[in-house]
Image (cartoon, rainbow, N blue to C red):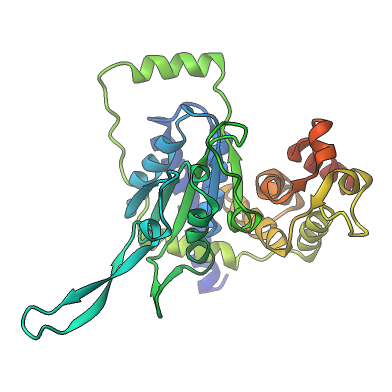
Length: 331
């Protein structure tokens, strides 16, 4: 085994240890939601961004803020409201005057997006104009103000929460914005026993003390490790065929897609399926990526990239149901 291979193996073991430490720490404040926690960690180490959806009161914000403490990252929170302006997110240039020379110059005042972990709270309660302020930051890791481009700190991870679009006072996220999110995790109501635990553990006076499990430098190293994991050609081909099968005009698309889908997933989805499978394999302690890793990440990666038509809505067809059919068809 070469030196690089031994180093990667050691780092993979470190990632498994970190995963368990993160889950233990989150378990002190979050009851249940194991699948959501796994999907958030996949997005983080795949160097993607995560969209959390669920009705109010399911601890979406608590999950994000707790994760920031456990990862020991610089974090910020942006509360998206209908009157929020793009400059409130990215920052703005202000005119300043030198008290001695009286010379005037522009100075950039960084906005809350300049952090390692950014919580975009209730992102769909602000109009698309302000939602779009995150587009460049999420895709390129930088912000342009005037004629100057400012680099964002690394790692850079956006976790946005949104309420179901059926609720009043929400604005659907544009498709271009949705596509920037690596995956969408759905938070559901807890089970009866989980809700009993929530009530018992949150109505007393004890305050959990969360200990850091990883730092920024380690997160960056582990993100690089995910990218180095090799993927067999048949697995990569499976991911590409799965993404292409969501497109109504593609020869690979089955009848249900042609009937219910207006727009399918783009090439960014194929990339996300491969990188997400890598991250899932590593988090599971494996340096080998399988078709099962692709299939297990398919729903969170694809569900927000499918634009269903009115017929699908009328017949009660959900994106997850359609993805399940695609997985069965390509099995």
